[in-house]
Image (cartoon, rainbow, N blue to C red; front, side, top):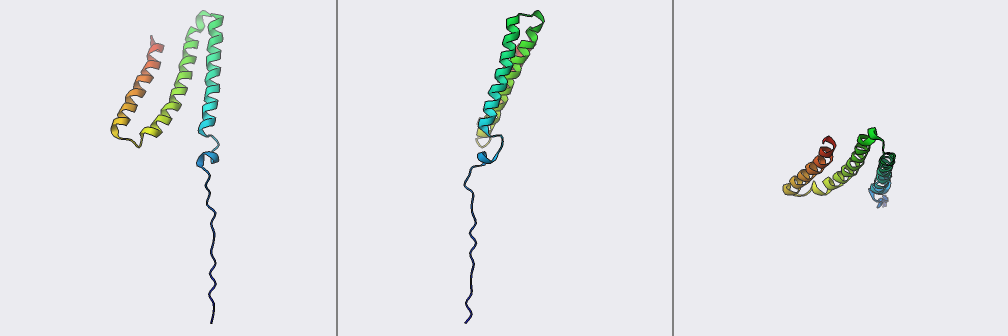
Length: 110
């Protein structure tokens, strides 16, 4: 009688999270955003300390850019939370985002 040999393959499953595989994880993005925003605020602080008359617009623009970068990152993270929720949450997200954007842009215009 012929005996039948069966071979079993064992597959190794990876239990590591996807955040360890990515180069730009959330923690790294947050850190470098804070570094970039700190640089923008430091430059605007120095320009304010110099008290140059023509640089007031530059200071305002730099601070607006810094705030916009931070809000953009928070908006992406908030959308990840809201996208699987009900429509009411999505509407609230859009309304809040529009108000925040208007609060950044309108002071620059006036």
